[in-house]
Every structure is written in structure tokens, then in C-alpha cells.
Image (cartoon, rainbow, N blue to C red; front, side):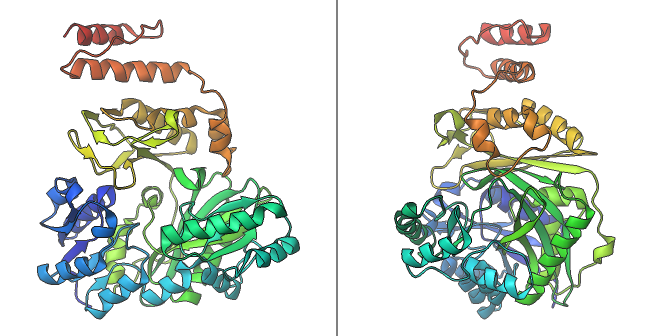
Length: 499
């Protein structure tokens, strides 16, 4: 296959800008698409060409595969990169690209159908001799069927949507009398979110760690794993902090999980980047969870510890090139940690906080990476996921990565809207997190406690307030003075108040 010349990026926000930059580095022309809400977005400004998809709602814009393919034909794009979300795991769209002779930068539709459905993926995991949670390998026909399976495997159990993720269509069940109503509500939610009401049932592993293996497979039969990521810090099954490597995964467990993931990829005929997700219990037994047949939000932490560019490799694989390394040549260096920065208010039920970004001061320094898609003056829309950016730190070890990331959060100022930065700093300051005593229920337990006011947190908040006060033209309301302020912070704050 010839080298790709022009790639249409069928996405928005930080991942679209990430893909634009990767194309530029490879000498490929990036093409953007946008909704009416994203007309002035950064990915639009940085692309060589940009085309309107439609109104702001995603069903009228970024989910319009027919419109995206029409634009690809019109602009002469020879490939489409879907990023993550939207059409990235839509097998019909991948198939439509192939029919049009346009390269889909992702797995083939057949592998996507095999592994994108969680029930079919569980059956494939059985064929690949992978340990998985006990439960059904097909969708439940009724709540009564679920009751029979739950009685066999024992409570607690979990209902899950077969066609999606992100916490949609998921219900934890601890007693038989809860199952009937949970089945109806989970199925209804799955139907609305994914267009399929199919749900299945599995044993609920209590207090597990969520650990995932990054895969890469080429068109020549080569499959490798690029280490693991720990994603246990979650809220409502949505990841908040990711890191690589996991604090509890040693070389032997990494090898066993990686080899199991590669067996599954070969069983499904998988090509390109993908992620196999596992639950790991307190005895370090691991259980297959699901496969994400796309580039992950958290791919940056893997890039930093391996020194590899996953987007570059995705494009090379799509061009038909073999992987330029073997499994034995992959090494992990240091520790990387990522936080997702959201426009939301954790102190008010995590409600989204759309609006204009009045002030934006970005963190920097050694080992700091920010994957962003916003700028000062940008209006954060209401129609999409409220993630603003991903802030990543790389350091020699986990403790140093936490310290470096905490410093970066202290420098980060986003004015005009609410964000989760204060919560992220609280997590990094927590003793259990610092000691890696985490599981998928960790964040819920932390949020149930009163928020402490640490000395470092107070100093960081006051410093950010002082900087913002100096830079904003309108006089802000006077914050309370603190004995913990340095003379510089007090002077800067007073200067800002006198303006």
C-alpha cells in the first residue's frame, strides 16, 4: 500500500488536535470536520482544510458517517482517523470506508464486530483460553434467566450493556429481589445510549483494580503488547486518573496478561491499536473485562514510558508497514501519570460547567505534557463530553510523577468556568493514593469523606488566585488572607486588588 497523503480526522477536541499534529510530523495533510459549535475550534484552525458537518448535536454532525465519507471523497482524503468515541468503534462505518476505497485507521470491521460486542468478546476470550469473570457469554433473554445464572455464580453480580461502555447500562446487584428492576432499567439505558438493549450478567469482583494492556498488531501477523496502564481511579465507571506502569504489576504478571491479550487479538484477526481491559483482584488473579477497539484517551502515558508514538504507529500499520520492533525490544522507562481535566463542578454534583474560558494559564516544565483542545476565549459547548484537556507527567518513579503532576496542577489556571482541578489535587495529596492503595471504589470512598484543606493545597490555591488577580482587568472579590502566603503572593494579590 502506498503512503497516505491526506487524512480526514473524524473527531473534535484534544484528540482531533493530537491527530492534526501527528499528520504534520509525518508530512501528511490533515483535514478537519466540525459542527456549528466547533467552527472556531483549535483543530479546525490548525488543519489544512476544514468542512462543516452540521448542527451542534453529535447525531447531526460527528455521528454522520455518510456525511463524513462524502467530505472525504470531495477533498480527496485517502484515509479517515476516527480518534476515540463517536464512530471509532462503529463497524458499519469502518466497512463503509473500505467499500469506498478509503483506509480506516483502526481494526477491520470483522475484528471490531467480534470484540466490540462484550458478549462476543467473552466468547472469543474463552477460545483464547483467557481467564474471565464467571457469567453469561450472550445477552440475557429475560430477568428470569439472569436469576438462574446469578444463583449459580453467587452474588454480588453485575449487569452490563453488550454494545457499549462508560458506565451506561451497568447495574450492581447484591440481592435476588433487585435483579428484575435492574434488568429493565439497564436494558432501557443501553438501548438509548447504544441502540441495543442487550445486557449480560457477570460475577462482580469486589474491590478490584482496573488494569489494561495496550496492544499493537500489524497486517503481517505481528502482535505485541506495550505494557499496562492502571485505571482504577474512576467515578461512575469513567476514568479520572491513569498511570503506567501499574504499582502492583510485576514482570511476570505483565507477561501473562500481555500474552493473554495477544492470544485474543490473534483469535479475532485484530489489526492496529487496541486495548484489552482486565480486573485484578487482591490475590493478583486477573479476569478479562472487555476490548476497546480503538486508540484510548489515556494512550499518552504508554507513549511516555515506552518512547513510542502510537498515532504514528497506527498510521504506519494502516499503510501496510510491519511493526518496526519485536516484543523483546519494548522496554518501560520511568512512570507516567495522567489526569483528565473536565469543565464540571465536583462540589455541585459534578454538573457540567459550559461557558467562556476567561483566563487560561497552562502548566509547563520538565516531564510535563498537555494534550489540549481549548484556548482562552473559547466557549465550552454543552453538547459534548466536558473534557478540556489531559495533563500528563513523566518522572523516574511513581512518587516523583505524583509530585511533578501536583506542581503542574498548581500552575494550571482556568478562569470563567468550574473545573475538577481542585479534586485532582486532592486525589494526588491523599495518602492512600500515594501508597497505591486504590481500586475501582477508591474515589467513591474518598468523596464520601470531608475534604481536608492541606497546607500545600492552600498555598497552591492562593498562588493561582494571586496570579489570576494580577492578570484580570476587572477587580476580583477579595479572597481571605492567609498566614501561609509568601510575601510575593501577598504583594501580587494586593497589586491585583488595587487595579
